[in-house]
Structure formats: structure tokens, C-alpha cells
Length: 129
Image (cartoon, rainbow, N blue to C red; front, side):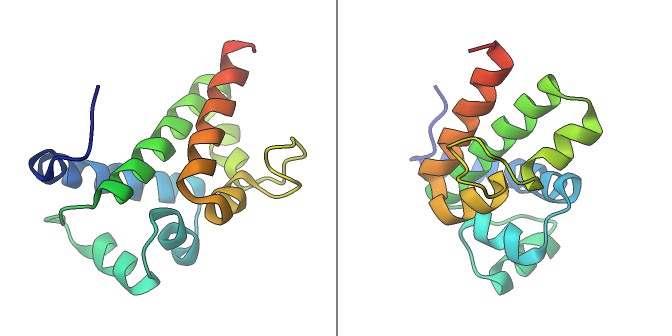
């Protein structure tokens, strides 16, 4: 299984991870503040990361966040048509996991544990559980 503890692995994967996160941000129509919060960085750090085409080595925490979010993205695109898959994260959701907020807002509030729960939720819905 892929891990992010090794600095060498993070250095190797950071550029592609940031590229994937930038595309996810655009597809989901996230604000700069939402993007920064999901990545666990300040808005100024996000702006620097967004503009840096060479990439920066990401932390284990940031790599885990991006991994969970890209898993959610992929699961949603397997579950829904593209337009709905990209709208779903911003829609208010009445499922108990989201407590009446959107998946994006719940993940901002709950951090990595909530991101992993949302990923499991999407995978469960997709799998028919």
C-alpha cells in the first residue's frame, strides 16, 4: 500500500498530487478559502502552491488530504454523471454524516477523519451498501 511517511515518496508524488488537487478545486468550483482549508494550509500558502508549477514537497498530512479527496472525486464520477459528480460536494446533504451541511463544509470542519468518512460513504453508496 502507498504510504506518505517517506520524504522521498512525498517528493516524488507531490507534483502530481498538487496537479490533481488543482484540477479537483476547479471541477468542484471551490473558493480559495475552501481549497486552503481542505488542504490544511493558510490562504497565502495555497496561493503560492497554486501558482508554483515546479511543485513543493507536501507534508504527510497534505498528501493524505489530497489522496482522500481524489478518492472522493473518482468515486463520485463513477456514481454520477460528470456535472452532478462535481456539484455534489457543495450541495447541502441531509445524511447524518453531514449534519445538514455540504460535504465540503463538513470536511473543512472535520479534517482528515471526516474526509476519510466521506470517502467511505461515497464508496459505500457506489457499492450499493
